Image (cartoon, rainbow, N blue to C red; front, side, top):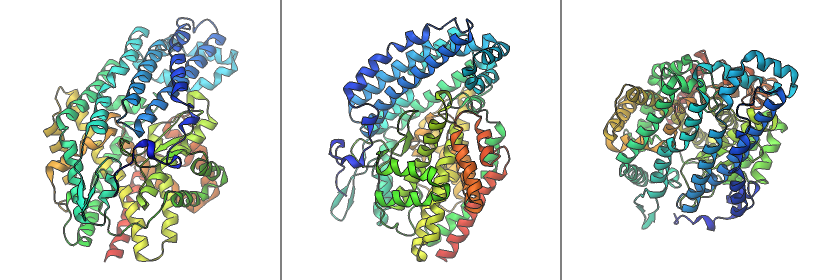
Length: 606
């Protein structure tokens, strides 16, 4: 394995097209300067929303348009930093953009309290008088639902202004993890293999068991060197959110997260969260059986490094070599059941418009994500390895990006985003549909086993690791809310206890390094995000099965689901597609799919 290239050394086709966002850093700087004047533009409507329907419409349009532009300024800086965390210029740009955005949010903090002061009756009258306000009806209704938790204009302004420093904990963790953290290389056949956030996934499925073990240990040890710092940053992040929940009058942080989410309009009932944790624990015997089968297939011994919680388990069959361009074609074919309305823009994004930044380079952040706004490409970041796991990751992120594409094409600014709760449905749906085609076309035992290995990597992350982290996270918030504290030893030991319960005695534990697992998940800085991966994969597999069985009617319902954005509550969006997440059946269907694959694995490995 060669040393990773510098960012500037990557071929253009391996990088995303940020020039479509801003042609140059100089143009970005002009945009930042322009956005610094937006707080004054937004603030001039304070105290005037009740003047007339026309004034209200102008205020809302001004706020949302200016906020969208300001978020594009931040997006450009954030995407640059994601590809090279060692470049201090990008960190400075992110800081400047975040400060600008916080000032804009503070300037617009009067909006919700003032809208509530108008009362529903007056808002209804304004909608009748000015039909263009009709688009905001759901927004107004969602705001009315949150009335008890919206504070005075003065307090909302303070909270908005405080958003920047309150995010400092995750920024510190990001810097420690992506800029300062170092990993010792792994020696293999006279070569020194670099361990990094970009390369760890490839090393963990290396053909040599000693390389896999050494890479896992190096990666864990690099995190353990920062364990006390990262314990404090995580504690600070949780305390910040708990403070906001108390200030807004919620009974707990979980209550606020379920009610508000990212867009203040989630409205998820607690039963959804409780169903997941209960059904997960009921189905742990399926996971215990899975570990037993893998242990037998690996010669009777299964160790912590064989099942890394942040990546794919040690392979039972080698992945076939798959280039980025071959994977792109495979994914397009796999999504054909949704028809040309879906596949045509998907092809443009992959082959013409450079949505995806897939090359490996020094300083690139770990993991993968999709990021975009109305009027931008739905950008994807990942680090490509020539295997089915990268194909799966690409399919997943394209699910997010196509969801974004349809929502932003179909909805006005106010609804052009969508709930995190339904985001993981679209991403896992793509994986399920592509996987079904790969399994149908698999030639022989080894190829079929390789496809199942990709599936188990996905289900392991989403229906084992994420529910475990959901249990872990809930305990952390409850501990802080009860006046307790978080330390590195407590965090590590408690996570090991939960994972040991899930392993059912089938995995030999390196307790110290396994305990470092909480440091691998930046998701924990997004309160109560991780449980949505598990609900997402369950709903996605149920929907994919419907599309494959019913054909065009189910595909049409699914495309409509992608288009609604935030114009309805997330559970209503899923009902459009045909799923009711307040009931246990979708979660049970997810575990039924897992059980069927475990049955197939047992038959293949004997």
